[in-house]
Image (cartoon, rainbow, N blue to C red; front, side, top):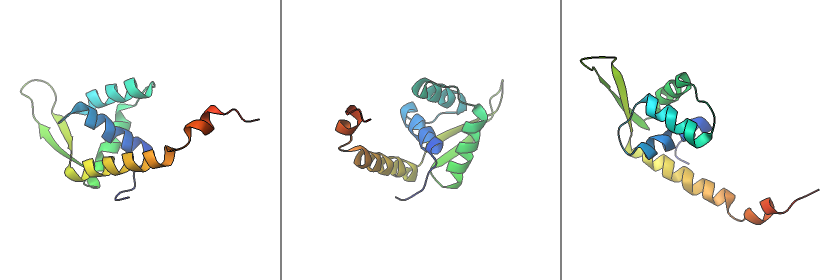
Length: 107
């Protein structure tokens, strides 16, 4: 695998992919909460985004709005997209053949 990711970092990348382009932290938090079915701390998303940017998987830019707060927009880099794809393939391989095992109750 090209880059080692923590589970939450991968979840943030997938949430970014679902946003289909540039996004910021609030939609990411909402997407993660919706998909994971649990609360997600905005600070955790900020921290993960910082790590992902340091790894070159996310690029960001500041947008100084005329009214309101300055917002940091983020997007996946080509490298980030390649890492998401690699994780998808790896996870599919890991899960392949386990459906029968998961259906069979064991004592």
